[in-house]
Image (cartoon, rainbow, N blue to C red; front, side, top):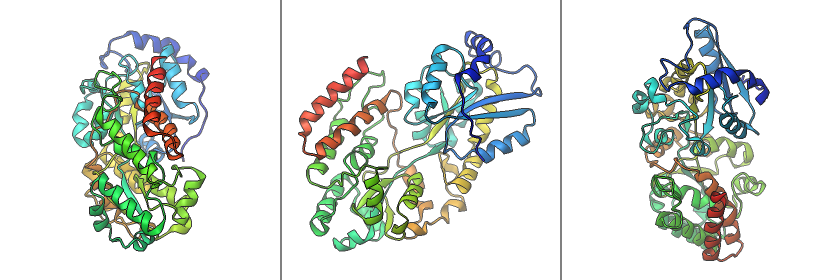
Length: 429
């Protein structure tokens, strides 16, 4: 069972003297951040969040390494702010910290973390999806900030009876071919709207912009040097225009993911499709228990995109960086990721395990028997590199606030202009 205990900055205050010493020493892990005696008792503080599913493995690691104790501390509400405070202050940071794929870009400061390349982490790259590995490194790959935990490749859920009512194929392979491109997806929406009166997708943000922008290239909102380019990059405007086009055509249900209306819509079939990573399937079952057998899963337009996943990093304040890295290397190895997939459903970022029977034989009865163990590995291998160098979540959050205005009738061009202006103002502060 995951340990749940609030952490405070006071708990970490005792690390101040040693942490400052670690910060002032060299980056060589052989001379800093390591313990003098490999067999001496060591406590590793680990700032975690709910969801990674690593609890059983943490227990196993401590049983197999008697001198290591993992002090796991969880505080979902203040996790990011507490870390930022500790790193900025130069004291109070843990030995190991987890950061989501959305949060890691703004923490990529080489003064804050050990370069895991110094521990030999570059030898692990071959075991991980390129798209996920790159999210944990600097733009040129010379600095490895974190090792990926799980992954969130996206596929497309579709409501079977709405496809039947619209005279469309319901076989998942045929549906995949039907939405090979985003233009195909729009045409599908117009057909469904005409034949059933139901919208195509949940909303303009989760149902269009978020997945589409991730297919826009490695650098979208910013260039590789961190300069804002969202108003100059055609891929960003294209994703915006497509989302607005869906909204103006009445193809969005205005039921954004995780809202109460969305939960009802999942159950009653208020929309025909939804983009979902593996972790979303559990939420669908939880929120729409009466919809068993009414949804199926196919590939999404344009290939796939990634939504979710985290990284484990070692703050430079750690006095036990060598031991922290040994733990990270072990717990995120392919064997352990497969174990978490079998016990908790977290989708591995290590493609070498996708041929395991645990994947190839896996089907989901709730989703009409969809072979999720085949669909999601195929999706994972189609995820392309995306911007993970800069603070892209600040921009996507703002877009998520503005697109509903377009769904309610606001002019897309005027809203876009106001959006760009607001983003520039926010980033200039």
